[in-house]
Image 1 (spheres, one colour):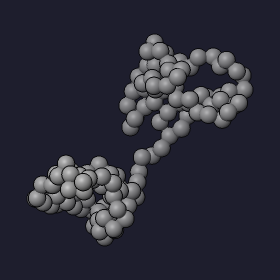
Image 2 (cartoon, helix red, strand yellow):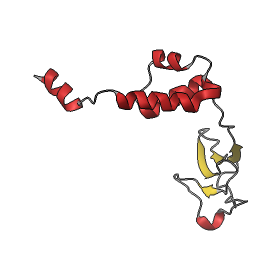
Image 3 (cartoon, rainbow, N blue to C red):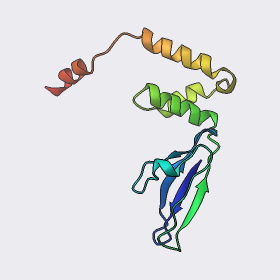
Length: 127
């Protein structure tokens, strides 16, 4: 969840404070970050607006993702980027109930592959 200053002139949203999963509020980094004495665990003291046409807005995301997005996120963290074919391999209907085991199997398979050297690959092709 985040509290943003919405600039009327540009429509830009400037982050002011944030809270994750119902945890305490914290100042959000940014060009006009709040001071620590303005942010408390259960409340945020917002400064008076310089421009009366600006507004404060609260935005929240539920953080849920469908299986394909979860698979893509996992592959982004464990590879140099997912291929659609890799996502399709994982997206066989078993991810929702067995994702932890599928991830463990995938990582074990990757660790069991012979090591490769980027430097060796590059040298063979650079000359």
